[in-house]
Image 1 (cartoon, rainbow, N blue to C red):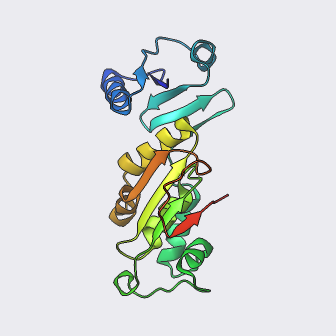
Image 2 (image 1 turned 30 degrees about the vertical axis):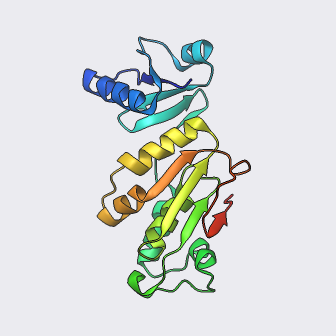
Length: 190
């Protein structure tokens, strides 16, 4: 079971948002009280997420992870400038990424077998031809929950980036045991 707790100083609105999201995911919502991360780990192990103003995040004494485009942001900016992206070149089967209008290229399907933070899936969804499909798997339920939240809730300042995130279909699973994979390109990134 995954538990969701609000951030330490969450106001009522954010607590309600976190509770609604937790319930929509089938997770258990637990009031935070004044418990520290260590208190939470002692009670729930590592099976909890903290819901903050940035959405769900993995909080541990050594640091936090919340959804962010990270390197995908830079790679998308480079694509806008007409620069190459090695992943897109590999997926399209070309030595240099074809910058023709997306409508002039045939769509492809991609399965990101190790989604993680979602950077490669985000770049693929942004840069592949119109009508392409990006599916993704992530074996860690906590990381999948954070990244899936980002794909479905994060709003970028550019609408086309937000739209690219919404096109990604992510589910929790291990590519090594999936037997019904039907994508034309299987990608084990990282």
